[in-house]
Length: 304
Image (cartoon, rainbow, N blue to C red; front, side, top):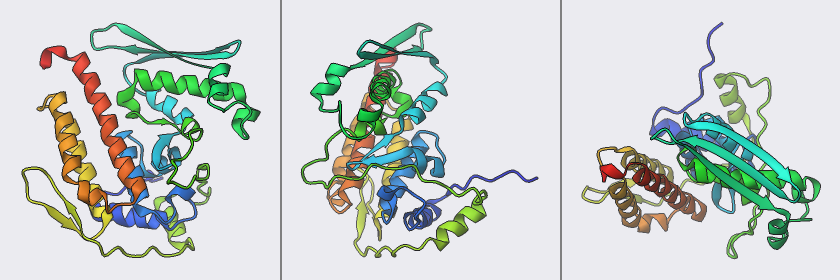
């Protein structure tokens, strides 16, 4: 029996076509339907988290215009990290606690504790709120404590993303219509090969997305600008450049943060042409990279 090939775009044209196809499918979350740019950004986030495209769309959610990841998926990513040394979750009385252990570069074990209490839930207006907070309050306390501990201990593994459960509790911005809670997509059992998945997606009956005639200019400080006829091309080029700067170990972490900020500022005019939620996600991605680079500064003080 031949080994199943992972359905994964290999270049910009494939990524754009893939994103367009997925956005027209009824088998992806509502936040991605009819929004190929959001699909492409989610796939890019998945790349950062070592998730295949379909895994990214199943595990990454867009809540109020910002990406997040399901709590159980976040825990799985951290457990796969080579520095992970254990986790302990408890609920004592009205307080949930999560203790995460990480081995530092010097061999020492760092313990990070995250907590969340009934009183904190009351102050935030969560306790008794329709939905999981009313039905499973202890489970929600546990997920909040876990999210805090994992984010503080492993920002390099989860890139600063918060849990979908936590993001769903935050009110939408005044100018942004509240989005419906995102549900994980269900892929039919019979669609068990890349060919069948593509066929199923192609047959999905949804309205076509209008072609954008706007020109999107990509600026890199010190280089010639590049023009794209659609936002997907710009997003892919911009994300690729962000990744190159972020991973360039020949540049000090502090200098990489400076270059990432300069890149965003140079493309401010093009950002204004993008869907607001896409611009927010790209900005959020830079901030998460900054957090990880700051952590590298602390762990490698002698390299400054």
